[in-house]
Image (tube, rainbow, N blue to C red; front, side, top):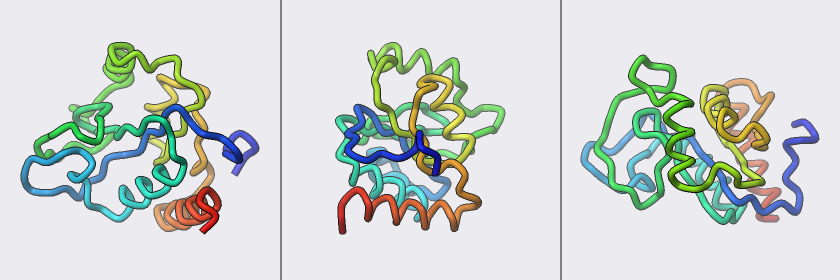
Length: 149
């Protein structure tokens, strides 16, 4: 982790976590829709931060509140019909959250790139972690660091 990514004594105004490819098969709140282990690990780490606001960055829908009910979908980040930085900026502007600081982005490179298009100052504690296994290990370590457990 770089110095920018240490979050000691930091209570972010916003944490943005990625959606996931594994989903329920019926409409559900965004908090329940994504059932994959990576999304769940990001969610647990985000919960440990006790941020003022937590949003899920959906590859199809963009920024989602946890209680927003959505249909299952099959759109990965980077696909032709995936959410764009321009649409995310419009969503963040409508929500009045463009100027939040600090912002933490948990997720892989595509996710972080989209978040940083809106919040260039976002902290990215998973930066530099290799593949999914290394990111999962870092999420577990961060969660332990942030909760003290």
